[in-house]
Length: 113
Length: 110
Image (cartoon, rainbow over the protein chains, first blue to last red):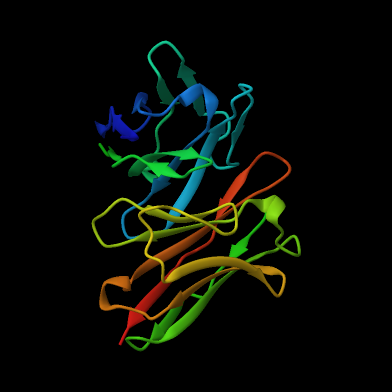
């Protein structure tokens, strides 16, 4: 069974840092296009970042310079490093594996003092 | 960055047919944008219905289909059921490597 499981969310103060993880089973992270997607409370889905099988990475303009996507092939896990957290980063963060479109259940990040 | 547009809301009668569309500010949507369609119900993670324009997931009901129509990506629901009431999002990929979601369509079955 294909499964993605996110972890690492929580309550963080503004200016802090966080690393989110997305562990895959039945699915090879390094062979697929892996995305991070976020959804602020009551809002729509917003694409955050992607890492290609080649290792190329791309970011939405709103997070470029603060977010870093990476993967650990040996652990079959995707990561998102978030620095200089802002209140507007509060959201549920999902990983999405393409091309088949498999989603994790999400991890909630709350940025508040 | 490109803007992807969807109808904010649509209503369909039970058993009826409705088409949701997904347009791009850059012009015609093609198969090269690898259009996706997702369904999200309140409190749940999104679920992929259609990938690469028209490929349907095994878990997607047969009443959903994807296509290109009139310069846009389209999701057609034929024979709407009450459980199809949800938010629907499209996603397009662009040649600069970035990916953009549409704003979502709230579908009401009434």
